[in-house]
Structure formats: C-alpha cells, structure tokens
Image (cartoon, rainbow, N blue to C red; front, top):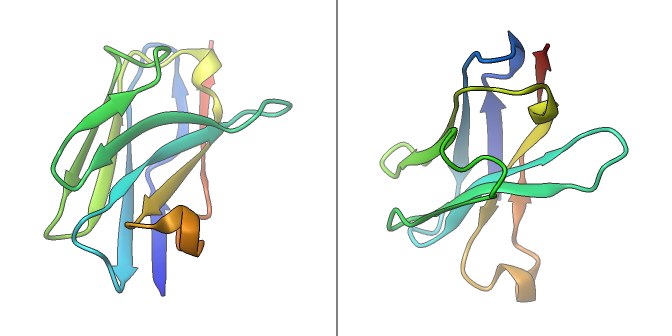
Amino acid sequence: QVQLVESGGGLVQAGGSLRLSCAASGSIFSINVMGWYRQAPGNQRELVASITSGGSANYADSVKGRFTISRDNAKNTVYLQMNSLKPEDTAVYYCYYNPPGWARYGSDRWGQGTQVTVSS
C-alpha cells in the first residue's frame, strides 16, 4: 500500500508564499504521476498541478506563473511552491499519486489534505 503525507499548509496574507510537501511511502512505482488538487467550499475539486516521474509538469491556468511543482524521486516527495498567493487560492490541497494503470486497477492514492488560507 502507498501512503501520502502532506505538510506545509497554513495561513498567509495575499501576496505571500507557502510550500507544500507530499511524501509517499510504501510500494512506489518508479514511473508515476504525482500532483495536487484543491477544493474550496462549495466548489468541485480541481487539478492544480501535476508532474511525471520524468519531470514533465502541467499547471492549471489559474496558477501558471505563480506556482511551481517539483519532485525528488529519491525521496518519493513532491513539492508545490506557491508564490503571489491570492484569496481565491484558499482551499484544501490534496496530494495524489497515480501509478501506471491506476484507472483500471483503482490504485490511485490521496493524501489527507492540507488547508491553505490566504487572507486579503
């Protein structure tokens, strides 16, 4: 089983920065995709950023130029550096892990979520 442990959320003023971390443990496939979703109250969960084990990254349009996703494969850890934060970035942020064939086998895994609150 794969477990994800997130850290780094908190309260920050608009314009500030936060760095989220997500450490995966267990039987990790070397080829995988990890990333972050977020969900604000009353909203659907939305993809924020993802990164392959090869380092290819994708971002939601709303965070491009402000957020940077990175990973350390040796530590099975993914990071989300969030700069120039806005009140609309306030949400619970969830880390996820997708190994090959995750949709077929239901082997995707999720973290417990970490709250990010941006005050105006």
